[in-house]
Image (tube, rainbow, N blue to C red; front, side, top):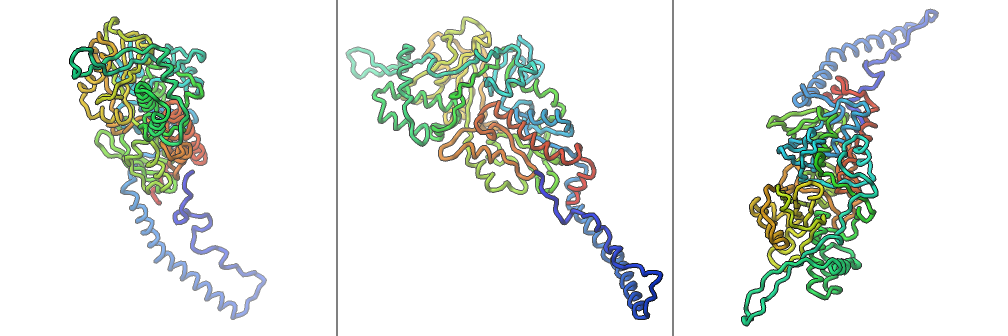
Amino acid sequence: MLRPRSSIFHRRRGHNSPVSSDDTLPLSHNERPKLGRLRSSSIAKFCLAFGVLFVFVFILPLLQDSGKSIHKKFAGASSGIQQYDAVIVGAGWAGISAAKALLDSGVDNVLVLEAQDYIGGRSKSVNLDGSINNPSMHGNVTNIPIEMGSEWMYANTELEDTLIDGGYLKGIDTNRGDAQFVPLVDSPFYLQTFVHEEDENDNAPATLKTERMEDELAKEEYKKTLGEGEDGSFGHAAKKYKEEKLTSDLDGQFLDLVMAASEVDYTGGRDELSIFGDTIDEDNSGKHYTSVPGVGYGNTAAKFAAPVAHKVHLKSKVTEIDYSYPNGAIISFTRNGVESKVMAKTVLVTVSLGVLKAGNIKFTPSLPDWKQEVIDGMGFGLLDKCVMQWDNPDAAVWPKEEWIELITSKGENSGKWTTFFNPTSYKGVPMIVGWAAADNARYMETQTDEEVQSDMMTNLKAMFPSITPPDRYIITRWGSEENVLGTYSFEIIGREFSNDSRLLQKTVENVWFAGEATIGFWYGTVNGAFDSGRVAAAGMLEVLSASSPVMGSSAADELQTR
């Protein structure tokens, strides 16, 4: 809701003149007043006339000067500022879904400020022509997109229904009975062990041997790791479980892999992740893979946003939101190095939790303590990829299964680049995606591209000795991206995520908040971000419907005369 008007600057009806006409009553024609009453009436009239004269000569100029000073106090910042009904900060899925909802409801005076040079946020498709999130590439079946961010879409959601109805998912198998799952238990596992060659020299150095485990043995070992957890973090539970339940080195190695895979899934470190967090996959929600030729999640975002693209200013980084005004806010931003300001009746902030944590946007006044505590306390993780692609179809020397896991032995590279996704069947060209999360991802971001490629190829060669270097590769560094600073939220130990998410979403005066971290159960998903934008737009519409659809001069005056 908008803040109530300040009584100081709210002119009430019936109080425009300093004296009411009811202060003196006319005498009746039939009344013959006595001399004393006439004298009293004359004195009263004289006092009244003198009072009116005093007000006009002395008081009104002072009030006018005061009004001018009030106006001047704001005029330096507001003169010539463009006015909007709604300003949305961020053009990811939350921002574009909110913008579309507002425009579809008749609110056209909308501005979207996006710090990046593309629409789509953490849905980011890199196309064969080098373009990013290109709507013209959506539907071009000769284009093979590479996803730097989100890749899967959950089935049976409002987002999926919306995109199917709009024809955005052509080329994707959206048969709900055939929705893809990514179960770890069905992956081929490769086991690394140190072995000593049998010779007369007992001091011969051990060599690292990598072999594919038999599927049944792998499943049996995996099931051993699914014991009863205790309150606390993944890491604590794993350590305790390893000490009390697992009896062999192989059991321990397998559990380490499961922990690393959990970090990839949830982006938080194993010592931060709560073992009692909600798991969407436990609800048997199917998934669709979006990064097929002619589609791509980022390209889909840009295509979906096409009707509102003219409202989006790219390379526009918001630096301050001053929401201290009773009927609006001033948003400061830089665009191509030029500082600018705009006014808005309502503001929606959809930047990542990482950006909020870093304090990259100044709020005036400062956000309430309850809001800042939630921002500081929630978990926000990091997940990166190294995507490798080959031109020669014969380069695919790995199994056809979609997920491949490497159980590393204890050593310097233990746990690094151990989870691989194989999208070759979707892409039509050989491709492997390596995943790194939490501390492994933070370490990776300090390396050069060549070092990252070398580390990942070392593990791939261990499993597939005949593999050749890729023809091209792309590496993400979401933690170093100043406009994101991570990937998505996770349930951290010691906090109730549902309550934190609710408070993060809660409106502060005329400022709304949306994004994956604000939507509770669907956190960390595009579907969650999409839904959160629509929720925020509904609240903004409720406020805007109580005023004129377009912010006119009167609304601007209310801001300027604060």
